[in-house]
Image (tube, rainbow, N blue to C red; front, side, top):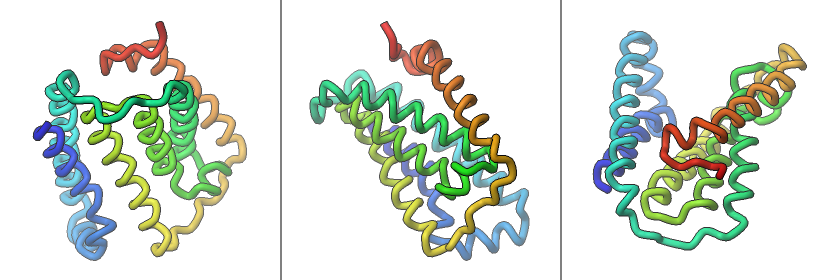
Length: 187
């Protein structure tokens, strides 16, 4: 459990710098963008690696904290599908991106909430609960910054985002989730 917690702390500490120390981040980017991005990436990868290792170590022995609702898995599947579309929309300058401003954060909120609906063990609560809290706090933190909505460059981008997100979702449901995490979603 402690490796998972350490990984979450390392990963989300570096991801929270803009929220808690925006001036520090800006000074680092002004001084040397490459150095800041390199340090940020290295710390993120270390944290992510610890999260994966901690998950592997703890998942099998994690106690059940609550019994997920019977309908939780079905709702989770729908929410994760929308999250995949939002992930794809984040990469395209369409109406979805302009309307939500931060479709990636909204997608993380849906993804993590979905997993909490389908899993009630302590490892899941720690992992997905931390992602949920982070994404909600980060989304709220963007409000005072007054981030401008991205311009709609190509209205067809939304169709591409829906198709790409759906295709990735199907591949993940049919093969990747079971292969990567040992939890097949069908069958």
